[in-house]
Image 1 (spheres, rainbow, N blue to C red):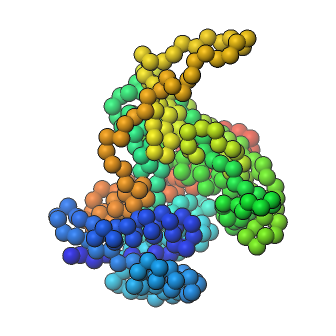
Image 2 (cartoon, rainbow, N blue to C red):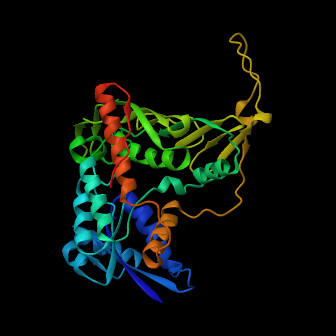
Image 3 (cartoon, rainbow, N blue to C red):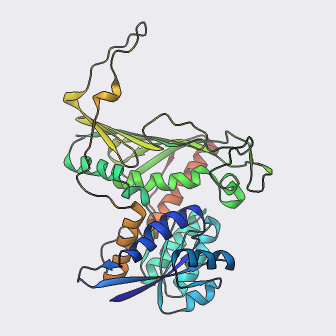
Length: 382
C-alpha cells in the first residue's frame, strides 16, 4: 500500500472542517484509502496544523487523527508529507502556498487564491514552473445539480444555449435580536478579505467557463445592504464591503448570463443556489442536487392577461431529471481527483491558473461597480 502524507491547514473553520476534513479526507481515510488505476491502495495520512494547540489536540482526539502540530515550518520540512492544503484566510493564502512550493510540496487550496490578481498570477506561474502538482477547489462543478446540467448540455438537450440565470444566497441574520449570524464577521470587513464579489465571482468564473462558455465581459453592481451587524463577541460593527452583487456576463458564443448573489435575500426558490439555462430546444433549472427540464414540445403557451388569476401552475410543467448514478460529496470527489493526479498523474484541469482567473473576474467586478461600466475580460498569460 502506498502512503500519501497531507498537511491540512485552516481546517478549524466551518468549510475547512466540514467539507475538507470530515467529509473528504477523513471519509477517504475511513473507506480504506483510494484505489489507484494500478489496483494499488493509496493510504491517506493527514496532519492537521493550526495556531491553537488546544483546538488541534481536541480535533485530533475527536476524529482519531494521530498527527497534529502548531509548527507549520516543521510540517513543511517533513519529507514524508507530500501535499499542503490551505483553507485558511484569503489574505494569508498566497504566502502560505508559496512557502509550501518552496518546500517542494504539491499544493491544493480553497478559493480565492488571493485578493490581488498580480499576486495570483505570480503564484500560478511559480507553481507551473516548479514542476509540482497544484490545484484550486472548484466545488460547484461537482454538485449533482450542475453535473446534471452538464449531462443535458452534452446530450444536445438545450439546442443553442441562449442565456443562463443564477440566483444565489439567503438571509444572513444580523445577530441583533436573538438569532445569531450564520456567517463570520470577517465576511463583511474589506480589510479581512470580505465581500461577496471577491467570494462568489471566483465561483461563477469556473461555473460559467466550464459549463456554458468562457467569460468575455462583465458588468457588476455591488451593494452593502446592511451596514451594521453584530460580531462573535456580541458587539456591533460597521460592514464596509459588499453583501450583494448583481452581475451580467457575456460568454463565448453569444450566451448571456446574469447571476444575483446576496447575503440579504430571503429564499423563495428550489434551493440556496439555482441556475436556469434556456436554449432553443429546451430549458433546465438546477439546484445543488436536483434538476428539472422543460422541452420545447412540453412548453406551455401562456397569454398575458392581468385581469384574471393565472391558470397555469408553471412548476408542474417541468420534469425532474432522475438520479441515474450515485453522486459522492462534491468536495470529496474533487479531492480524490487531485490525489489521483498527484499519485498517478491522472488528468487535472483545475490548476492555480483557474484560481487566478477567478480573482481576475472578481477584480473586474469590483472595478465595474466602481466605474459603473462594462469591462472586457482579457486572456491571462502564465
